Length: 171
Image 1: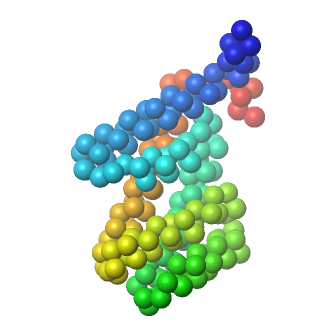
Image 2 (image 1 turned 30 degrees about the horizontal axis):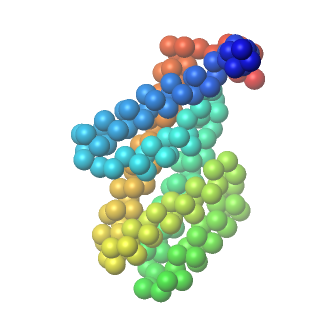
């Protein structure tokens, strides 16, 4: 009986989150896997990090993730194109990205996203042993991540309009 009491007390907040994730995951799976022939895991993982039953929280996370992802993309591309073949470019790029995220961009929410994105870009180049192929794959992965965040935010917004949270939940 306590579990049902918890559902009632939380006004189905966890159910809101689960519904948002179900719908967003289905959209990403259908669009990326079935229509584009891509593996949707990058977009789905990004969506999970960006989605929330509260639109304001989801938007703040989305903005922070987008800002830091773009920083990581720029730094990752720079190190991929300009950096040599040394294995040291990955730890150096991640350190530079972390410093820029922490002290220049200063959007602390999701600030680890910048080095993660730089690593995605560089890993693609190191894996393919080709700068241009790495740039192409890395850029596509970043686009998938951003698309996942956009889908997560959009689903959160639509569900909040169709099934609004109670006032006491919004604080």
